[in-house]
Length: 394
Image (cartoon, rainbow, N blue to C red):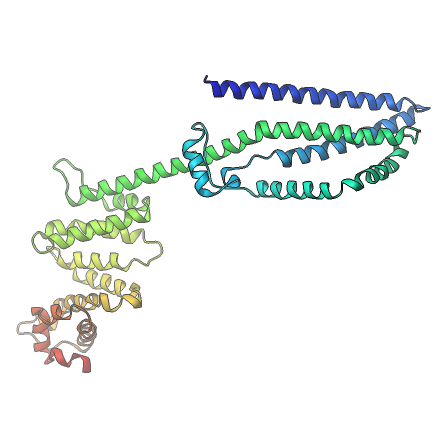
């Protein structure tokens, strides 16, 4: 035990002794009240005077205790100075404690009331004697209305008011700060535990992505359910990292190694599964690209995912993401049975209208040249007797 702990224990022991002495004083006051009541002429009057005296003493003690509690409530660091000062105190001060920048309504109310009570008390000092006189006149009949009843009433009030104030003040100073500190430590401990859990989940997600995209020889393949569960427990920031890592990996490999690019499909499915708000349209777009470019393309599902991406896409980002319509048009062309026939034939009305609508949008985008030069697009336009430059007018 170091010197600081020893000093704290010494102060607490001394204060506890003072509280014990004050409690004994209050007990003595109650005994004195009983002795005072012995002036009565019969047992009934004795019990009445004793009851009034104890009720008055109790009311005074509780009133004093309330004041002592208000005056003794400890302040958090925020209540004692600027934030900069608090930060310095927290970093350089008591290493055993906890520096926190928060306040409670109880602290604020205590602060306001103590200032109000002190201010009002100072302005009303001259009125205290007359107030005590009125109090004595009010209580005296209950105390037997003896010649000394008014004096005893005032003494009873002051005696128990001071005892109650001192006991509550010392108790609050001794134990309330520790209770506040314990509550803060428990709250901080819960936050730390939550942070550790989130950090662990985020780390598992990044490990999962690495193993899914670049598996080792002995790595067991993930199931879709496992990937969904891992992503479900991650933070939004980590989900963004997962998305960008999978997007970059797909972009690097879709031309040269389609088998690698296919590994991103389960990741994008997991991100979509856990998009509760249904606002991350890029997940659908990247899944559509991966389905479209895999070794055995899944064009119908790719078309469906492009459609979801287009529907969820914000209007403010529309021009930037008109590629979705362009690639959806390519998927539709590759699914067009009339165009794929030998020899190719003019597309049916519904398929033709859908493809034209997508190409018109793609022609307005920033990457329109990509679709203009695409051999599937050029072939389809030729078979259907359409020129690229004529699309806006169709």
